[in-house]
Amino acid sequence: VSEVDRCATLVVEALEAEEVPYMLVGAYSSGAYAIPRGTKDVDIVLSAHTGAGFDSVIRRLEPEFSLDPQISFETITGSRRHILTARKNRGVQVELFLLGEDAFVQERFRRRKQVFVAQLERRVWIPTAEDVIVQKLRWARSKDLDDVKDVLAVQTTANLDMHYIEHWCTEHGSLPLLQELLASIPPNLR
Amino acid sequence: MLIDESDPVALRALQEDIYREKVLRARKLTVAQRLADVFECSNAGLHFMFSGVRMEQPDLSEEDTWKEVGARIHRVRRMRDHGFYRTEEVAS
Image (cartoon, rainbow over all chains, first blue to last red; front, side, top):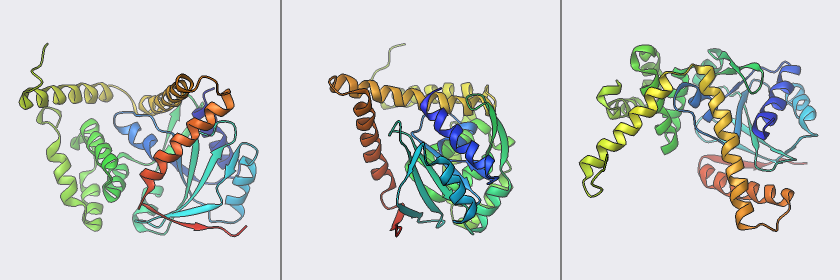
Protein backbone atom coordinates (compact mmCIF):
# COMPACT_ATOMS: atom_id res chain seq x y z
CA VAL A 1 0.00 0.00 0.00
CA SER A 2 1.36 3.43 -0.92
CA GLU A 3 1.89 6.02 1.77
CA VAL A 4 -0.82 8.47 0.73
CA ASP A 5 -3.37 5.63 0.51
CA ARG A 6 -2.29 4.26 3.88
CA CYS A 7 -2.60 7.67 5.59
CA ALA A 8 -5.99 8.40 4.01
CA THR A 9 -7.26 4.93 4.98
CA LEU A 10 -6.12 5.34 8.59
CA VAL A 11 -7.86 8.70 8.94
CA VAL A 12 -11.09 7.61 7.25
CA GLU A 13 -11.17 4.45 9.38
CA ALA A 14 -10.73 6.52 12.56
CA LEU A 15 -13.51 8.92 11.51
CA GLU A 16 -15.87 6.07 10.66
CA ALA A 17 -15.06 4.22 13.90
CA GLU A 18 -15.90 7.35 15.90
CA GLU A 19 -18.93 8.04 13.69
CA VAL A 20 -17.67 11.50 12.80
CA PRO A 21 -19.19 12.72 9.49
CA TYR A 22 -16.53 13.91 7.05
CA MET A 23 -15.70 14.65 3.43
CA LEU A 24 -12.48 14.63 1.41
CA VAL A 25 -11.77 18.05 -0.08
CA GLY A 26 -8.85 19.87 -1.76
CA ALA A 27 -7.19 18.26 -4.77
CA TYR A 28 -9.18 15.06 -4.17
CA SER A 29 -12.55 16.68 -4.71
CA SER A 30 -11.49 18.92 -7.58
CA GLY A 31 -9.65 16.02 -9.25
CA ALA A 32 -12.76 13.84 -8.96
CA TYR A 33 -14.64 16.28 -11.19
CA ALA A 34 -11.86 17.59 -13.40
CA ILE A 35 -8.31 16.67 -14.43
CA PRO A 36 -6.71 14.58 -11.67
CA ARG A 37 -3.47 15.98 -10.24
CA GLY A 38 -1.26 14.87 -7.40
CA THR A 39 -1.20 16.39 -3.93
CA LYS A 40 0.84 15.87 -0.77
CA ASP A 41 -2.03 16.71 1.56
CA VAL A 42 -5.06 14.71 2.51
CA ASP A 43 -7.59 17.46 3.28
CA ILE A 44 -10.68 16.48 5.22
CA VAL A 45 -13.61 18.51 6.54
CA LEU A 46 -15.20 16.93 9.57
CA SER A 47 -18.28 17.67 11.54
CA ALA A 48 -16.98 17.47 15.09
CA HIS A 49 -16.39 20.17 17.62
CA THR A 50 -13.19 20.10 19.61
CA GLY A 51 -14.37 17.73 22.25
CA ALA A 52 -15.26 14.07 22.55
CA GLY A 53 -15.52 13.21 18.84
CA PHE A 54 -12.46 15.09 17.71
CA ASP A 55 -10.32 13.97 20.65
CA SER A 56 -11.26 10.33 20.12
CA VAL A 57 -10.26 10.54 16.45
CA ILE A 58 -6.92 12.09 17.37
CA ARG A 59 -6.32 9.42 20.05
CA ARG A 60 -6.90 6.68 17.49
CA LEU A 61 -4.46 8.31 15.08
CA GLU A 62 -1.76 9.13 17.60
CA PRO A 63 0.39 6.01 16.99
CA GLU A 64 0.71 6.88 13.30
CA PHE A 65 0.53 10.69 13.25
CA SER A 66 1.80 13.60 15.28
CA LEU A 67 -0.60 16.50 15.87
CA ASP A 68 0.83 19.96 15.25
CA PRO A 69 0.34 22.00 18.46
CA GLN A 70 -0.30 25.09 16.35
CA ILE A 71 -3.83 25.39 14.99
CA SER A 72 -4.80 27.78 12.27
CA PHE A 73 -7.92 29.42 10.91
CA GLU A 74 -8.66 29.80 7.25
CA THR A 75 -9.10 33.53 6.72
CA ILE A 76 -12.20 33.50 4.47
CA THR A 77 -14.56 31.04 6.17
CA GLY A 78 -12.82 30.93 9.55
CA SER A 79 -12.59 27.12 9.44
CA ARG A 80 -10.31 25.76 12.16
CA ARG A 81 -7.46 23.61 10.81
CA HIS A 82 -5.48 20.91 12.63
CA ILE A 83 -2.46 19.35 10.99
CA LEU A 84 -1.42 15.73 11.38
CA THR A 85 1.95 14.59 10.06
CA ALA A 86 2.67 10.93 9.39
CA ARG A 87 5.33 9.65 11.78
CA LYS A 88 6.64 7.07 9.31
CA ASN A 89 6.82 9.25 6.22
CA ARG A 90 7.06 12.92 7.07
CA GLY A 91 6.04 13.99 3.56
CA VAL A 92 2.38 13.11 3.99
CA GLN A 93 0.26 15.55 5.90
CA VAL A 94 -3.40 15.31 6.82
CA GLU A 95 -5.25 18.58 7.31
CA LEU A 96 -8.43 18.33 9.35
CA PHE A 97 -10.83 21.25 8.97
CA LEU A 98 -13.59 21.50 11.52
CA LEU A 99 -16.93 22.29 9.93
CA GLY A 100 -17.66 25.95 10.57
CA GLU A 101 -20.87 27.94 10.93
CA ASP A 102 -20.61 29.71 7.56
CA ALA A 103 -23.89 29.18 5.62
CA PHE A 104 -22.26 27.94 2.43
CA VAL A 105 -19.81 25.68 4.28
CA GLN A 106 -22.78 24.07 6.04
CA GLU A 107 -24.69 23.66 2.79
CA ARG A 108 -21.67 22.17 1.00
CA PHE A 109 -21.33 19.59 3.77
CA ARG A 110 -25.04 18.76 3.76
CA ARG A 111 -24.94 18.08 0.00
CA ARG A 112 -21.83 15.83 0.06
CA LYS A 113 -21.99 12.47 -1.72
CA GLN A 114 -20.29 9.09 -1.52
CA VAL A 115 -17.86 7.73 -4.11
CA PHE A 116 -15.98 4.43 -4.11
CA VAL A 117 -12.18 4.75 -4.03
CA ALA A 118 -10.43 1.63 -5.28
CA GLN A 119 -7.19 2.30 -3.39
CA LEU A 120 -9.00 2.71 -0.07
CA GLU A 121 -11.39 -0.17 -0.83
CA ARG A 122 -14.31 1.85 0.50
CA ARG A 123 -16.76 4.60 -0.29
CA VAL A 124 -15.71 8.05 0.86
CA TRP A 125 -17.61 11.34 1.06
CA ILE A 126 -16.77 14.23 -1.25
CA PRO A 127 -18.52 17.55 -2.02
CA THR A 128 -20.56 17.97 -5.21
CA ALA A 129 -18.98 19.48 -8.34
CA GLU A 130 -21.06 22.64 -7.91
CA ASP A 131 -19.79 23.10 -4.36
CA VAL A 132 -16.17 22.58 -5.43
CA ILE A 133 -16.63 25.41 -7.94
CA VAL A 134 -18.28 27.80 -5.48
CA GLN A 135 -15.74 27.24 -2.71
CA LYS A 136 -12.72 27.52 -4.97
CA LEU A 137 -14.04 30.74 -6.53
CA ARG A 138 -14.33 32.08 -3.01
CA TRP A 139 -10.68 31.32 -2.25
CA ALA A 140 -9.57 32.42 -5.73
CA ARG A 141 -5.88 31.52 -5.44
CA SER A 142 -4.34 30.88 -8.87
CA LYS A 143 -4.44 27.10 -8.32
CA ASP A 144 -8.10 27.32 -7.25
CA LEU A 145 -9.02 29.20 -10.40
CA ASP A 146 -7.23 26.63 -12.58
CA ASP A 147 -9.22 23.93 -10.78
CA VAL A 148 -12.52 25.78 -11.33
CA LYS A 149 -11.81 26.19 -15.03
CA ASP A 150 -11.04 22.45 -15.27
CA VAL A 151 -14.22 21.43 -13.42
CA LEU A 152 -16.30 23.69 -15.67
CA ALA A 153 -14.60 22.32 -18.80
CA VAL A 154 -14.83 18.63 -17.84
CA GLN A 155 -18.36 18.72 -16.39
CA THR A 156 -19.77 21.32 -18.85
CA THR A 157 -22.41 23.86 -17.87
CA ALA A 158 -25.11 21.54 -19.27
CA ASN A 159 -24.35 19.00 -16.54
CA LEU A 160 -23.92 21.47 -13.69
CA ASP A 161 -26.60 23.20 -11.66
CA MET A 162 -25.57 26.68 -12.82
CA HIS A 163 -28.48 28.29 -10.98
CA TYR A 164 -27.12 26.97 -7.67
CA ILE A 165 -23.56 28.03 -8.53
CA GLU A 166 -24.64 31.52 -9.58
CA HIS A 167 -26.74 31.94 -6.45
CA TRP A 168 -23.77 31.36 -4.15
CA CYS A 169 -21.34 33.26 -6.35
CA THR A 170 -23.69 36.25 -6.12
CA GLU A 171 -23.70 35.88 -2.33
CA HIS A 172 -19.89 35.74 -2.25
CA GLY A 173 -19.30 38.43 -4.86
CA SER A 174 -17.48 35.97 -7.12
CA LEU A 175 -19.93 36.00 -10.06
CA PRO A 176 -17.66 38.15 -12.31
CA LEU A 177 -14.84 35.66 -11.71
CA LEU A 178 -17.12 32.75 -12.66
CA GLN A 179 -18.11 34.52 -15.86
CA GLU A 180 -14.48 35.27 -16.68
CA LEU A 181 -13.53 31.60 -16.26
CA LEU A 182 -16.48 30.41 -18.33
CA ALA A 183 -15.38 32.74 -21.13
CA SER A 184 -11.83 31.40 -20.94
CA ILE A 185 -12.90 27.83 -21.82
CA PRO A 186 -12.16 27.17 -25.50
CA PRO A 187 -15.40 27.20 -27.57
CA ASN A 188 -14.91 23.61 -28.74
CA LEU A 189 -15.06 22.45 -25.10
CA ARG A 190 -18.18 24.32 -24.01
CA MET B 1 3.99 18.59 -36.24
CA LEU B 2 6.62 21.32 -35.89
CA ILE B 3 5.62 24.55 -34.20
CA ASP B 4 7.24 27.91 -34.77
CA GLU B 5 8.11 28.82 -31.17
CA SER B 6 8.34 32.51 -32.00
CA ASP B 7 4.73 32.56 -33.21
CA PRO B 8 2.42 33.32 -30.24
CA VAL B 9 -0.70 32.38 -32.21
CA ALA B 10 0.70 28.94 -33.06
CA LEU B 11 1.82 28.43 -29.46
CA ARG B 12 -1.61 29.42 -28.17
CA ALA B 13 -3.25 26.95 -30.57
CA LEU B 14 -0.89 24.21 -29.36
CA GLN B 15 -1.71 24.99 -25.72
CA GLU B 16 -5.43 24.81 -26.49
CA ASP B 17 -5.00 21.48 -28.31
CA ILE B 18 -3.16 20.00 -25.34
CA TYR B 19 -5.76 21.33 -22.91
CA ARG B 20 -8.60 20.02 -25.07
CA GLU B 21 -7.04 16.56 -25.14
CA LYS B 22 -6.67 16.54 -21.34
CA VAL B 23 -10.28 17.62 -20.85
CA LEU B 24 -11.65 15.08 -23.35
CA ARG B 25 -9.64 12.31 -21.69
CA ALA B 26 -10.98 13.32 -18.25
CA ARG B 27 -14.56 13.39 -19.56
CA LYS B 28 -14.27 9.70 -20.48
CA LEU B 29 -13.60 8.74 -16.84
CA THR B 30 -16.10 8.30 -14.03
CA VAL B 31 -15.89 10.32 -10.81
CA ALA B 32 -14.51 7.22 -9.04
CA GLN B 33 -11.84 6.69 -11.71
CA ARG B 34 -10.70 10.32 -11.54
CA LEU B 35 -10.59 10.16 -7.74
CA ALA B 36 -8.49 6.99 -7.94
CA ASP B 37 -6.15 8.83 -10.34
CA VAL B 38 -5.63 11.61 -7.77
CA PHE B 39 -4.37 8.99 -5.30
CA GLU B 40 -2.15 7.46 -7.97
CA CYS B 41 -0.70 10.85 -9.02
CA SER B 42 -0.11 11.79 -5.37
CA ASN B 43 1.78 8.61 -4.61
CA ALA B 44 3.81 8.93 -7.81
CA GLY B 45 4.69 12.56 -7.00
CA LEU B 46 5.89 11.63 -3.54
CA HIS B 47 8.10 8.88 -4.90
CA PHE B 48 9.52 11.16 -7.60
CA MET B 49 10.49 13.60 -4.85
CA PHE B 50 12.07 10.76 -2.87
CA SER B 51 14.09 9.71 -5.95
CA GLY B 52 15.16 13.31 -6.53
CA VAL B 53 16.51 13.68 -3.00
CA ARG B 54 18.21 10.25 -3.30
CA MET B 55 19.95 11.41 -6.48
CA GLU B 56 21.14 14.65 -4.87
CA GLN B 57 22.13 13.13 -1.54
CA PRO B 58 22.85 9.43 -2.07
CA ASP B 59 24.48 8.99 1.36
CA LEU B 60 21.29 9.72 3.30
CA SER B 61 19.50 6.79 4.93
CA GLU B 62 15.97 6.02 3.77
CA GLU B 63 14.56 7.62 6.90
CA ASP B 64 16.62 10.80 6.44
CA THR B 65 15.67 10.93 2.77
CA TRP B 66 11.99 10.93 3.75
CA LYS B 67 12.77 13.64 6.34
CA GLU B 68 14.30 15.79 3.60
CA VAL B 69 11.28 15.16 1.36
CA GLY B 70 9.08 16.23 4.27
CA ALA B 71 11.16 19.39 4.84
CA ARG B 72 10.88 20.38 1.18
CA ILE B 73 7.13 19.82 1.12
CA HIS B 74 6.84 21.80 4.35
CA ARG B 75 8.57 24.80 2.70
CA VAL B 76 6.18 24.65 -0.26
CA ARG B 77 3.20 24.46 2.12
CA ARG B 78 4.38 27.50 4.06
CA MET B 79 4.58 29.50 0.85
CA ARG B 80 1.13 28.25 -0.25
CA ASP B 81 -0.46 29.03 3.11
CA HIS B 82 1.07 32.48 3.50
CA GLY B 83 -1.71 35.02 4.10
CA PHE B 84 -4.38 32.35 3.84
CA TYR B 85 -4.40 31.17 7.44
CA ARG B 86 -3.97 32.89 10.77
CA THR B 87 -2.38 30.76 13.42
CA GLU B 88 -2.83 30.27 17.09
CA GLU B 89 -0.64 28.33 19.54
CA VAL B 90 -2.55 25.83 21.64
CA ALA B 91 -1.64 25.82 25.31
CA SER B 92 -0.32 22.36 26.17
